[in-house]
Length: 234
Length: 234
DNA sequence: GTTGATTGGGCTAGTCTCAGACCATTGATC
DNA sequence: GATCAATGGTCTGAGACTAGCCCAATCAAC
Image (cartoon, rainbow over all chains, first blue to last red; front, side):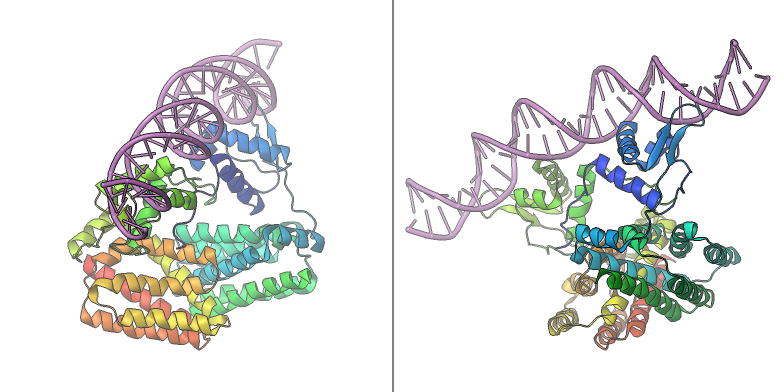
């Protein structure tokens, strides 16, 4: 009966706040960047300017955005993920609840490995291969500040490269459900090196056209971060 | 920039019609069954009774429901999938467009194989194994009339058994996007027998705890129906 | 046949959301 | 310093949506 669930997650204002927050936290617009003009953004989000402005005001008051008037003005992103802190992590988890957390982790594992598998099974053009490799190189060359944003970009590019909009938005959704948690995990050198190896394995499996290896590599990688999460929770 | 997409797919009325249609077409309420009482259903869908009633009236006028007043009354499902017809298929495809079709098929492949993989990797309780086997047996014992409903039930039970609500609803969504198409494919004995073997292979791989085999079995099965679709389109 | 519980049918007052128009501010360009 | 295009800020009237209430029909139980 899971299909007779609520039609809407909340009112237009709440859903808009959520969506903008997703764009900010996933790094779709990096710190210092600005959102599209209100008129254009309202049209893209399919809502009225009034509702959009309420959402922007809320985010501005919460410290995520800085709004400036006049030509060359706009809503500039000021958000920066907090310093990783296991205390934050515990708090975030108790806020969302263990059941929901496990739901989100399972969801992410399923859709991301599904996406990798599909991409590995497809015949890739040279351009697609190039995009994947570029994202991987960007990530490997990232400093600690950009790491999370480029990590997200790498993961999401896999779903995007399948050409399925539905799959891409689903992966973005899955990622954003755990982004606060991931941000609270300290970035230790051992973990980063381990992740780098896994990212490379994922890309290689996809480029080699090996769906089994791709899904296995993604599963290992995500289960690694899930284990890391659990470790910091105890 | 896929994240700055429309916040809502339509107004409350349209989304409600869509959701009810999904429940009907996926066989969540079979023909002759009835929807929950309006007050309860409105609460579950998170909308007002007024809006729900408008949606029900639309579906009733379109021939999907029969509404009866009084105690033991309610909204009864009268819908029955049309007889399979390649002509319908062509029409349905031109209505949705090739790009959207390919998007939906890719999406379904990714999420369903992801779900099977996750379930195969989990430690299943006796009850979970029993549910899966029961759904498989139901499907194998089905007549032509119940076949599609029970096929849907089998596929969706895989996602449901993972315990992830998000994954279950996503798979239901993916399935409903192609249900009209699937319904238009004639059910030939050779295909049904082939499908039965593949369903068995999927269940066995999951029960054996072999994620690679599970994802491969689902991928083969879904690519089979996708190929069937393409065949009837040419 | 009367009763009573259950269910759909309908009304109203109030809130949310929208489209569109107009105002105010900014800063690059001239 | 004046201009002007781009952008946020504000208002209004109309329509969508809701919560809550009461009415009408049906039918099993008595």
